[in-house]
Length: 111
Image 1: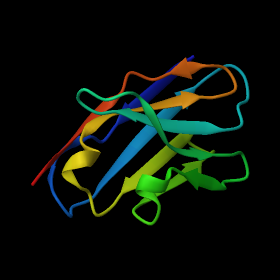
Image 2: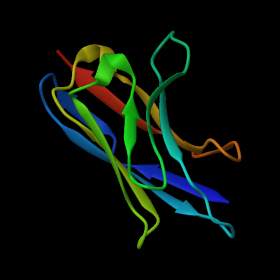
Image 3: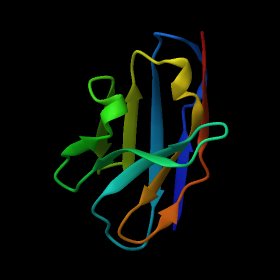
Image 4: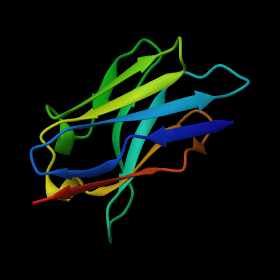
């Protein structure tokens, strides 16, 4: 099992980034979740998308982030809009049903 997250980088406040997570497995999976861990903070769930493509979001990102998936390419996306300095974190994708995690991608938002 491999989850490869990418797309992080340095962006100014108010900017946008699109994160990608390529999921490589030998089994089918349903939901994919995005988590983040900011400096000195605990890990927190950001969003989750089910097999039907319905996303749910943490309150602190509602209206700013959007999760989507392309099952043809086994890729899940997280679009980050209107970024704030407090969004600075390493973002991880994972399979909630199996507990597999990707390696994370760093998002840094400057003020």
